[in-house]
Image 1 (cartoon, rainbow, N blue to C red):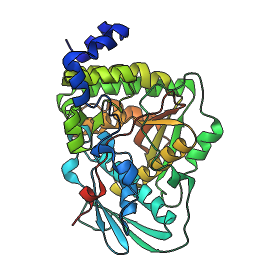
Image 2 (image 1 turned 60 degrees about the horizontal axis):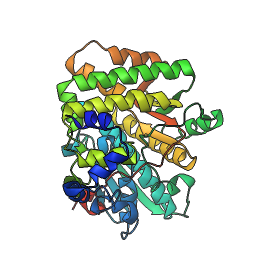
Image 3 (image 1 turned 135 degrees about the vertical axis):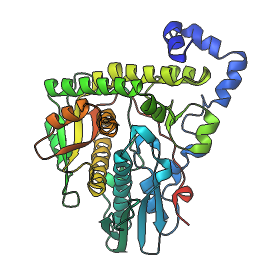
Length: 389
């Protein structure tokens, strides 16, 4: 029986708790980190990110940014007065991101954290995007000069930000003023990026339908399904070694369901896909108060992807400080890119084009609302692993 099937049948009652607490399962609970949520080397960066010397705390802030599939595909070259940001191409997510769109969005989010941390330490950042012609991995160069310290509310949220995959409060709309404030985070340093909201019921329903259909399409695509599953960390020892990927603890499950998921044998790829589809349909889209889409003028241009990633991270940090929950949901663009790669009919590509204002292209999508639970942290690789020597 699959793990998801078992969980549905047991009913998660008191008898279940007694069973899983007995005998050999007691040892498995220890071995799989059931009682160690958020502990161990994989989570130390969250408390040590700003402890390094020189410019290393800026890199530490960058490593706390959201990263698609938590692949953390970034590297940093650190000098005396500058930091260079590189794509770690070896950590790409394969068919789920065939044109590396999401990789550069994640790099843009890391860059935004780095810039915010620079200002907070009295360093004025001069940012150049894609500075090395002929080297697409060189995402940005940040030259730093002494300035007055400028701490911001967004910077304060860097270690507090989480992706929240739990259900959100139903029937509670995000205030229009909050939506407007987040849209206004697009600025002079992100001239090719803007935020488009889908908050009205009809528009929200249309995006929900598309997200569910895109999830079904990804699961039915063997290569995309395999690429997605490769980043799912189900073994506690592997998680502590790799310090990356999507985990059971960060999946938005109840404490008991998450504990049982760790105790039972690892899920297969097909069972994981079924669980993801169920969560998308019954938790994520069913409780979204609104959807946001970061749009750019050319979603294939890496510099604009970086701008969009910076805006996306600002929105997430603002939402965190404003008591809102946010979850990145990239299924639509993942399928649209896959359609282009395989020469398929552009079902999702056309749907996204219809949703966007004239002259703009969808880059990244998220849902937002009011939280029902506080999400757990995701694993993070330490600064010393991502600084180039």
